[in-house]
Image: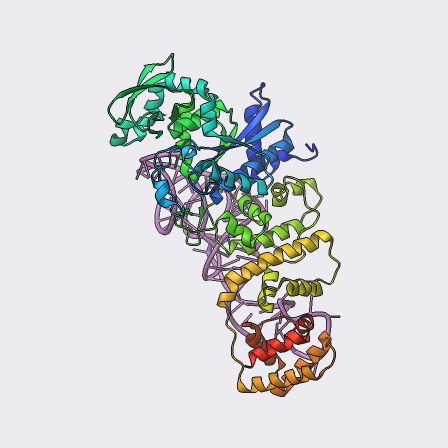
Length: 519
RNA sequence: GAGCCCGUAGCUCAGCGGUAGAGCAUUCGCCUUUUAAGCGAGGGGCCCUGGGUUCGAAUCCCAGCGGGCUCACCA
């Protein structure tokens, strides 16, 4: 911790959140470790929202580290004992999965055969994403925790307060649902399904309840040792106590649920984390992003066109505001990242207000890419090519200074991203125009002249030739000539300096391109 | 019905007590050689309305109007 900085006045939200934690734990003298939790439901592939939650929670954790010397832990908790409620629309083995409705996710096979269960596959996808960002986290499987008995003590407490807890939930439910509601969901020994059935308390001391199975037979079961799962709002509250959770974020859709779980926790160990609700991501039209609709962006899609840092920056900005998440966000975020990185000053005070500090957990990279991403996209568009070497060499012509190894690597990296962006979003919209009869004539004369030259031409020589023939066609207004060439060659009104481009392409390729145009 | 978010340039948004900002769009000027991947110059705003706090409000508070999302099945 740097004592010179007054963190208390920081406007950066991770510090504001960290101070809320500090304020609370000052009262708990025994506190040895601060636990941050993020939840994940592995019923489908990880959502970008889940990812955002981990990223943002980690930013708070990092801010806390800066102001308070204390151990902390980031828990990624997977609700893999939850029952499968419906088959995700994009899942390839629809029919096979349909047979497993109401089964715990961790008990469903993975039909690709690569993982031990359906939940395991999705859990691993999440871990892969988190590992890409080098998060330091502890992954916890709900199934393992229930089965190991780690939750037993808290489960018995829930049973002990069965009536009190039920009374909190029941008023929030509709009549039909009230009849069948129970905080405990027995896992059927015969079928393996998670049952939503009314239960009777048999013995609070021994932790035994009973329910009627599908054949109307009265079955007794322990609530402990993985025989029962808690209904989720109770489950959430139980987890706070069992895992001693100090901080947890949630989407605004869970605000009412959080309030209920908070009440429930009074009957367990009364542990309620500091909480920050965040706004949900919207798509281009302002609608909620959902996997089934396929709108908005997935993590993979972002990573195809932007760096992980640009994604992290997007997640950092204004978590309490609903933000539209679509393709246009990527170049903007890429440019803002560079701007923030270039604006970095060494003053501590300003450093912690800069998103870059939070994105990189306080360890600032020594350099970033040497050109703005949007400029690079313009270049790729102007060159109308996906050839990364040509683009790279043109960049070097333009930058005119030596690049460090890091900068070279960064440049190569974002050129690939820019090419992807160009191919998917710009190329389909470009329309090259046919040259007029006169233009064809002039271009073919240009071709002849280039052919005449024995050696390779320099960029100046190419440029001179272009001027020479342009003057024949547009003696008063050479500008028209260039606009025409750009339209014919690239489908846009602006373009690169043609002499330089031809020089990079070399004679053979230049001739090929020009001949193609006048066919 | 309840909760949350948002109303700032034509569009998308940033700013969140101290002279109204960016990108894109638009208008004008610029191609025989310091980078047209553009460059230079301009136009465009009762910062939703009304009240309050303040020396001072786009910014904070209250009320309203408008837009949107979420929850009230499941998680």
